Length: 287
Image 1: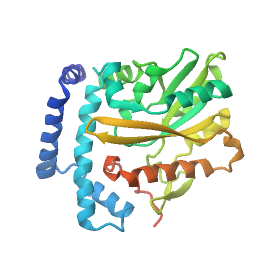
Image 2: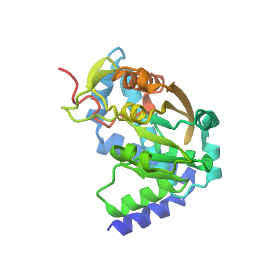
Image 3: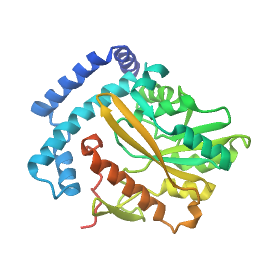
Image 4: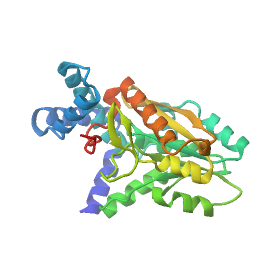
């Protein structure tokens, strides 16, 4: 079954964008009128995040979100077969050279933090521009479906990135080539377990927040950057890096994490339909 799914996804990836967009539109109609995938979760999240908006406004965000969500699904499939030149046209990385230059001049690695804004899967293209003296690692949680896991790993690594568990990053960096610098990419806006120690404000709500990027930056004494993703038009995106600090150990515990989550919130508020609202981000909020 796994091998069949692998083959099916690979075949879909060869289809042109106009055809895949048609599939995404069909899935939107099917979901809107029949399936209703996580519709309640999405609306509950929007009510919590945007209490100042009217119900009509939140419904509008929800509808646009599902359009972007199904686009994201077909875009992720298309990524299995996209060339570097195709990514170049559709995924504009504005100031990647600034990050690379900063790392090389400061002789200091970098932690790159992102959020679940569409299309985070296409960030793999950043590996295509890596110089020889920089290694790049991204956080990854293995899937239970071994065949699909193998396909996704292969796709995410094909532009030069290396997948590792976030908990193993520091150990990996301490062993990596001393003649090379490192970039570590992590997405940290998921909801931790209820007992997670650190909590902070996200959309005016007290919730637990992962501190992995901050802890890694401090342990390795590396600069930490925020990856701002913007959808410019259908299946076209723009990525911009923002330096949060190059002196992480000058900050009190949790301060950098608060900066990260505030930047995430600001990004989402600007384009609320481009964020993954199907995730129950507020399930462990303070009552």
